[in-house]
Image (cartoon, rainbow, N blue to C red):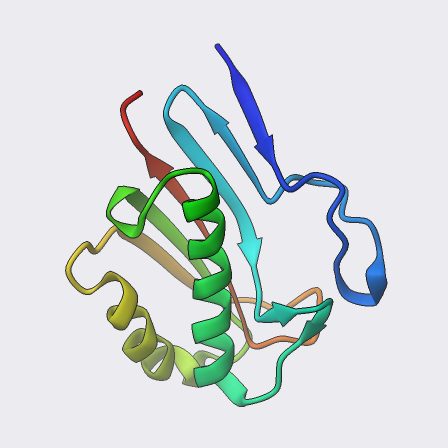
Length: 127
């Protein structure tokens, strides 16, 4: 089995080295690490709507880098800092996955960085 890692050696908030890959591919499966609304090492401003968009777009950018698309996503994990943001997040999420809805889990969680949402996914594409 061949394993390919994407984005090792990246840096996060405060330019700290991240001790994990942005994604790992094995036998057609792609596991994308949790993505937040980070741009140039900082969380963007704008609240749950802007952060949801940016976190999902960051995740999709990694999918595309590995040769996958939203239609290949089989599961998404969502962590929300505030459960009151659930419906706002769903509105943005549907814009990206409305026609190709994967399985999904969504939970409330305290975040490791100062953000409102984090998303990860698992995708599959037959090789």
